[in-house]
Length: 456
Image 1 (tube, rainbow, N blue to C red):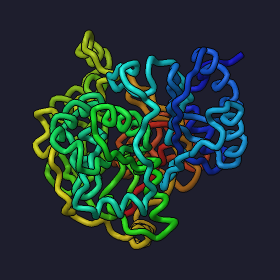
Image 2 (cartoon, one colour):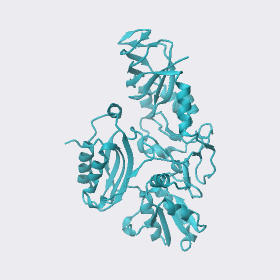
Image 3 (tube, rainbow, N blue to C red):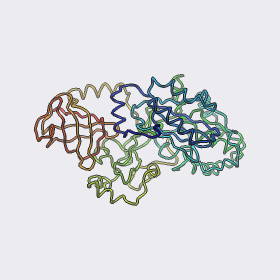
Image 4 (tube, rainbow, N blue to C red):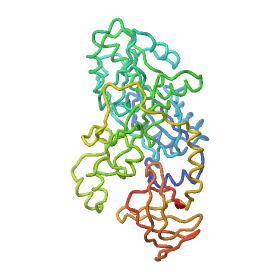
């Protein structure tokens, strides 16, 4: 009985590419009393694994919180695995407005003490006494009421790239930090103001609304389904968006665009930008905003120190990070002094720039690049220690001296001049269709990254 992943992320990505089937990215949650979370977890893993479902799920005695990637053709079967449980019958699945087949590359279902780390003692208040749920149109209407206070219950790195106009955006790194801060800030408005709250998918507000009602707030409201569901509704119903910018999401994409407004800056140069990246240095993994120019110059690193570290032999890198705590600290480290243009706290509702129409961009890129590069193939392996990449030429011809471009969702666009290569294991200056090419690559690349030859 398989209760764990047997494939690496790279192997899974290759299988997804080979299958060529559309996948949907979605999220859902439900509060319920689960007597045996371990058994519940195992049962879910077995059923979801059969459906090629991937994602990150937390289960606890208080319920379930999931972010998933599902083959579109298996959507109904996936829903059936949920509805065998009474508390998930008719559950709302928040389907993303943008999809990436590689949003998740592993199936992880973990048992936790809580499905959201809120720091609250649930025994001290009625967690079922929640605020009024508002749909997108109703949410927009209450925002127009001068008696309304709207609060963003997400973290600083989420609200920085997008938020509702006029919202209070706490300068916090965790959800649990925001609760006492907001309670103190709004203590004089408990009786007469509308306390309206929102988060990514609704789960944080579900608990927060009950907490604030317990604290004495009389008029408590929450955005039903969070920003994800709001984005879907305004699109389907042609409603004006009161949200500006991008919605941060906790998968490979790190964000999906709601409006064309760019409200944040590259943390390194200050240029309008709202694309998050993780520092390539395995001893850092700082989450920060980085524009394409800085990404190319700094090779996905947050500082010159990290850039220099990534160029060291792997053994030296391991030695440098020995004893340092990373992993779950990834999102907590977003306020490094190396970031000169970091925004947090009270954020502006004024766009710094606008994204061009995506159709225009796509057309321009097609016209511009059609005569500038040709596809050679896809990366089949990357040997981390040796910093060597392997790919098979599917089309065209490659010679030493050519400039190649390696492109992928995480790798970005990386160019290098081919000085030397092995063709089918031997030194050669020319490679053609069907040949296996091995070459030195001084930066991290990933399985299924595309390899192009740049044309003069």
